[in-house]
Length: 399
Image (cartoon, rainbow, N blue to C red):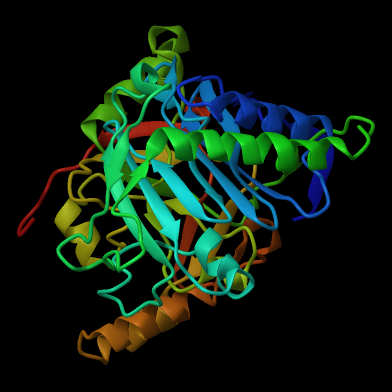
């Protein structure tokens, strides 16, 4: 099937910005976000990643991380309820600079990772990008010490001190040695971070001229869904069944975040994103074929329908009628299933099975038929008019 470019599918996401002002650096992180946006998030030496989340008519986008040569900001701190059931996570959560990293955790906790390495240039990438989790237990180099405590009363102590004691997490992290601080002042650290961002990062960004505005998140050209694939079905829960039936009658009867058909949460193991860029993430798995009225869940499983299509609590059958092929892929399980039938279960065999399946993945727009056991992987949210509630399935024997 060829691609139709006559229609653009809009993105429809609300962009969220840092707005909270709990710490001295919060306002500066907002300024960094705004100044980067003025420059289309394209500043030499600075990499920006985005996050998107939400469902229905409550979909959001925000900056996820900003990485420079000697600093990294990660944005995922709850700052308010956005709309519906989704929170606004656009505030900065972690700030790493030369000397340390501050993490503002859920539940009013704060952790500071104090850099104690001997060679910043050598350690920089590991310190800025690597995980800081039980370094001693895992035999990782001693390049940081961990300090942890509460930040609950930070605003009341902005002109005083809030000491975070060193913790070794039951000897799983490195402990301070002679000459290392036994506690870190959260107030002083926060002010030092704010000064660094204001005096070093912001001026660097502002040193670049503001270019003409470009469309940062253009919609996708519509891709046709091949007529040679189908019909499609999947299984879901009673909650989805009731929501979709109500929404197909009148979407206004649903809350904004409920106004969608179905969405998937199952990964395809085996490195599909490396094999086909854009094919990573979570999918709604759909099988190909009709389901006769006398078929039960038990017989559907015995016929080889993947467990990813039939979840543990999925009793309700849905037909899938994609309006377009955007973000939809197809795999063939035939060879992998034959391999599985001739091997006993172990980790190595399971990995081989997943790799064999992943290697068959392709975009549905490139599919011309020929798969023995096709499974369709839907990597986007389906609209209400793309999902047809069919019936409740009977369990059958041994289910």
